[in-house]
Each structure stands twice: as C-alpha cells, then as structure tokens.
Length: 114
Length: 113
Image 1: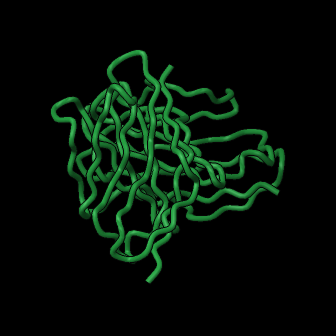
Image 2: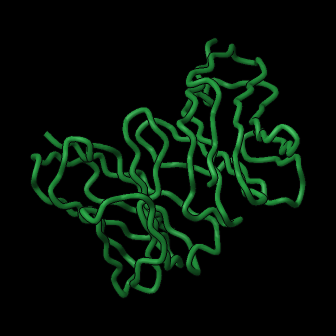
C-alpha cells in the first residue's frame, strides 16, 4: 500500500531563510508524488509533481523538490522564504501521474516571521 | 473561467441527520472526486465519479454516497451523521476519468453537533 509521512507538523523560518519541508514515501510501485499548498479557508493548490521525467522538479512560487529513491524521500525546498509562503503544505502520492485518488500526508504548517 | 465551486460553504447538522453537499466542476472537466479533511489532518479520498458512475472508492462506509449528473456536477450524501463526520469536504475536478491534473474547490465545512 502507498503512504507518505511528513516529518514535522510545524516548521518556522525567518523571511529570507531556506525552507525545507520533509516527505518520505512508501510504495511498492514507482510512485507519483505531489506537493500541495493550502492557504486558510481555501482549497488545495498544486505546487509541483514528480512523474519520473526528472528527479529535480521545479514548481510554482519558487518551490522545488528532489526525488531520491535511495532515501524514499521527496523533500520540498525554497531558497528564500516570503511572508506569503505561510500556509499548510501537503505531500501526496498517487498511482497515476494525473493525481487521482491521492493519498495525503498529515501536513506541515509553515510559519514565516519577519 | 469559473473554477471548482462548492456549496454550501458552511453547514451545521445534528447527529443522526442526513446532509447533501454539492460540487460544480471546472469548465471542461467531467470527473469529480471527493475528499474528507478532518481538523489537523490531510485530506482522505472518499470516491470519484466519471460518466455518472462511481469509479473508485476509498475506505469510507456506505453512509457516504454520491451522484453525478449529466452536466458533470456532483453531490455527496452522508446519512446518519456522526460527530466524527465533522470535517472540511473538498471536491476536485479533472478530465477524462482523472487523466488530467485535479483542481480543488474551497470546500464545505460540515459541523455535526
């Protein structure tokens, strides 16, 4: 069965600092991995996805993630945090690259201080 | 271009009652998926509708049922509400039975008292 584990329910950074949100996956088949962001009182927005085309995936808003099979990880990074990045971030896995029937992690709340 | 719209935005129901939530997919989309997001948790997949039929289902009891209409809009019905059904219910739409990226609505916040 597929699953994802997000390490750290809360991450706090200063504006301009590196953002690192951790995600490890468990899958018996090659996974399709996704990162979503959820702002307060809003739905989910896709940041980026891994579909085996490239191990380093660039997404929107300056975020990127690297797929590491040896570590079963898909950590999300951003070189310089902005106040507007404060939100809830979810890692998810799916059996297909479109991302249907997604299996989500519990989420990581990112706080950004000035 | 209207995105995914859900109604109502908030709802309060009493334990044991029944509730219907509605979703209109993004223009051009024909597939609707429903997720339940409990407070402090990630969304959990309930089921997906395509061509007016339930195509995939997550680990939810039969109290959760749905419907898709010819115009691709969808309803989620929950019978015999439990306190534990209190959650944000998210609808996501895509095209071709889930062959394209899913776009999420803002959700319906259901509170069961």
